[in-house]
Image (cartoon, rainbow, N blue to C red; front, side, top):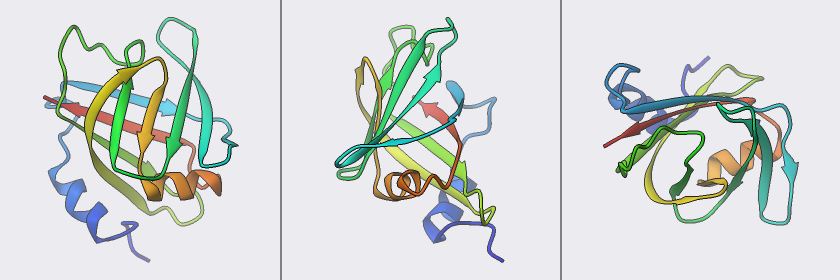
Length: 131
């Protein structure tokens, strides 16, 4: 059994900052994905107890952050490492996504995360920001 989802995940896992080096880290627990036409949506709770939506879709890789999930303090991180563990296999998927904006929702653009979310194959996202 392979520990990693693919060779890219293995490479990125080794370069991903630990929690002390990352400028900001968020662990999101996802109860359920709702499928749309070309995206999936999930709801999570932010640090203020408010419900925030996550939108995951395929396409050009990137991430648009949601300010109440991250303590940005006026900073604009360059990259976000997104990691999850596949429920059935235990394999770890890691992606490094450029931060392309800040929105009312957390928007993640990445094909594998989208396809696995459609299958409800994971229920946590570990997101680490790097300036």
